[in-house]
Length: 77
Image (tube, rainbow, N blue to C red; front, side, top):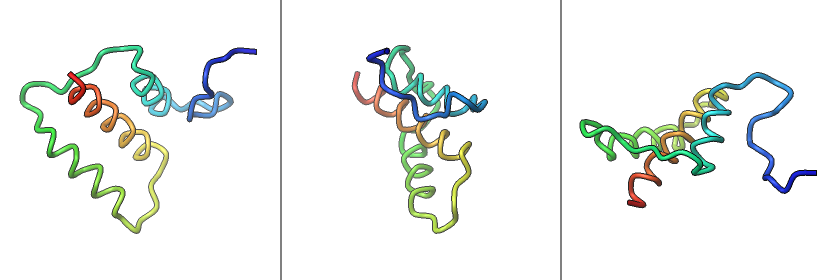
């Protein structure tokens, strides 16, 4: 049995967005915002989704996870 943590995405279903989010959150690859991307816009996007009363689909949830991972890595520099 592996000591690796269980990824958020279900290994029995195809979930490319969730798989990318898992990869970004793992820190195994180095990602950063492009020079023309405003970090505040990503924070606003995350806040908007989190504050919404509407249910989110798995793709949106994965996109928020990706945005958060990119911000964490960018701000960690």
